[in-house]
Image (tube, rainbow, N blue to C red; front, side, top):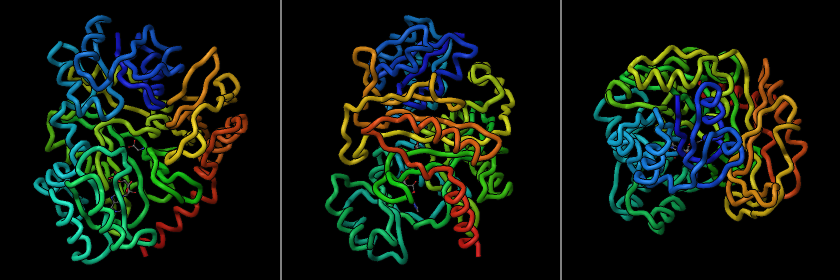
Length: 424
Ligand code: AMP
Ligand code: GLY
């Protein structure tokens, strides 16, 4: 099979590596990710948000399928345009991608269809009205701009932000359209599933770490790292919690019968079970790097099966994974680019290395202003996987920063006791 990959981050490096086992991969990229360049038959730099440019490349290389990594091309209608050109896009069409790209639409869709785990919310198209409501409504809230902000537009009131501060934030911000919703309390986790023709194939649950600094301090980022436990269920949850989250994903697909690609559920495990924080219309980054390396079913078979109306069963090995991103010093608020990246796949021991946003000059790699490179440790336990990941990161040079706490036994144990406290 000839598979086109759209996008060029760590997630797309992982997608490329998984597809390249059984397919010829062509990559439409925004920047020349050296990991993708090494694995692909051919790479073309395009505007990945331009349906015309992506389709032109897909047609030139006679791609059988295209796997779209990031959300922005989905929002731009890249899958619709591929379809018009006769290329199967593994990703939702623009209308179904609204589950991620339009938070107001997504919440209304969940309410109209009575989707389990939908929090209380109100939608506003006026900042002053939204700000007033923040003060009027009882209890803590999350305030979210409607559109895509890379997770950076959301604010949650509570220990770190007062309702007065949230009100000023909403009133003074550049956005006018808001969802204000009930604050959910508990532990967050991600459940991703392959979806086609109403069929759902679940992946192991993952816990991402969005805050920039150790101990979950600092601003939100795209995700600093993530882990899975052997056997799909995270230490702070039960099999019943996992199944409840999967039921919610299946409810959504029932009401979006045309949905295809990866559906990503972000859940808060609360005292009342999993509640929906949001849905994404694609693999998570970093979460893709946790699940794709432990897939026992060929990813090419999954995509081809989706195209042919025969989505296969999907198996994963009983392996724990820990993924940690190295990011430029100062990321995400004042990232300093230009540090040399000395970490290489050859010297990472048993860990896997995935490149994200790096710049190549004279055969050397340097940081840009986004997440640079990720390592993934694999093991029988989270502890083993974490050790491999951290060993590989010991070679990291100056000018890069890592959250070493991700996947450490004491930190995982804290999640478990937090969840016990929440359930009490
Ligand atoms: P989102 O872009 O919707 O994923 O929001 C970014 C982050 O804000 C989430 O990962 C949560 O940590 C937090 N968040 C969003 N909505 C809520 C909510 N209703 N209650 C508590 N935290 C939330
Ligand atoms: N890791 C969060 C996301 O991909 O949206």
